[in-house]
Image (spheres, one colour):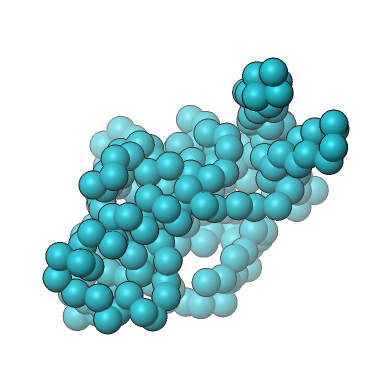
Length: 228
C-alpha cells in the first residue's frame, strides 16, 4: 500500500503507474498553501491519483468536491464508485461494528473494505477485466456491499488452511470481531487516569473538528452515564 496526500494533480504521484486500486478519503480544507483555498481545488489535486482503467473508490463528499472527482475520473477514464454505508455490509453475525468511534471513521472503514476487496479480486483474477462505470449520468455510482472475508479482515496465513463450512463460519465471526477490535491511538480515543477522563482526537480541519465535536458529545454523555 502507498499513501499519498498531496500534489497528485501537479506531479505523477504516487510513482506506481498501474496500481491495483485507488482510494480517495473525505476532503477538508487543509494544506491550502499547496492545494488551493477551495474544496474544489483540493478535490482536483486529490483526483490526480486516478489512473486509466484502474478502479477507484471514494466516500461521500461535499457536492462541489464530488463533481470535481467525477470530472477527473471521466477525463482520466478511471472507473469510480462511492462506498456504501458500513451498515450495508452483512455477515451471519449481523451488521459490522467498528471499534473506532465517530461516523467519519465508519466511512473510512467502508473505504478500506472496498479497497481490500478489490485488491484481492484483481490479484486473484488478473486475467479478467474489472467492471467499468458510466459517469455520464448524475452522481457517481454506489459500490456494492459484500460479505468481508477473513483474509481481508485478519490477513493471517493460517486461514488459508481452513476450508468448507468451518471456513465460512470462521470468516463471518472474524469479519465482525476484527473491525470491532480496531483501535487508533489519538483518534476518537478515551483514556481514564484515576478520576480524570481524557478525550483525545487529532482533528485539524473544519470538517474533522465538527466530527470531533459530535463524537465528544456522545462519548462524554456515555462516560458520565457509566460513572453513575
